[in-house]
Image (cartoon, rainbow over all chains, first blue to last red; front, side, top):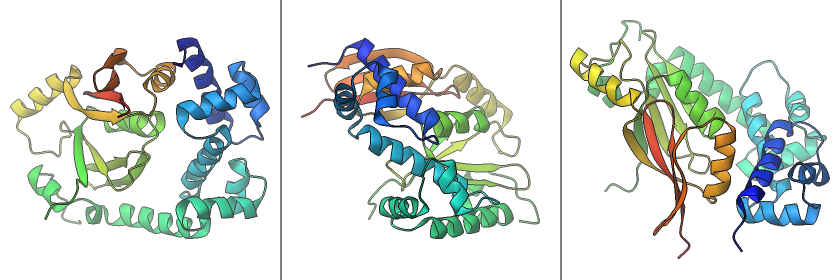
Length: 142
Length: 139
């Protein structure tokens, strides 16, 4: 049965609630209230539209934002974990590794190295054909 | 033997504005963001589920680019009109994505419509390009 336009708007409102509140302790009841549906009905509609459950989507958003914070300096992994809404460092690390194949510390080290190289040797990242074809003027220092 | 596409280029009017659209609004991830001393910025992004494809967001109007003035003018005309058709963006649900992006202020050239290949809306990035945003028909 096709989804009505009004239903889409309500489900999208709930999805955007997750996008804006992933860092808080939120549950299915609070999320489904945004859509003015019962928990069961909302869960079925959300999963049908997005192919993931609301909880899977919430976890994905938390991990996504955790990666952005891990790439920054000056914030500990434990603070990243709390900032994105995880209550336990252990469960954060486990979920992070499950999704990415490596843990948050490994990701942080990789991101740090990449950022450092991008700042110090940007030409290492730019294909030579781009420099050549688009005639990007080079500085003598690079 | 060529096995896949690894990079594609999108010309944009403004790289910061393009970053906002593709990364903040559409949820693409930043693959590389490197700036040379002369200000040339190599900014590449990847769609959420295609981390091995890099889309470079390139500004042809940057003063460091060696295009002649006539070419730069031509680029500016096309980009200012959002005239460059860049490709097709896949969505599992065109109506839901349309509602969400509209709520975020994205401009569409057309709302979702049934086509023989699926449901399609035409979306603009505000930096010179339009895309087909398509939910393919299930075979």
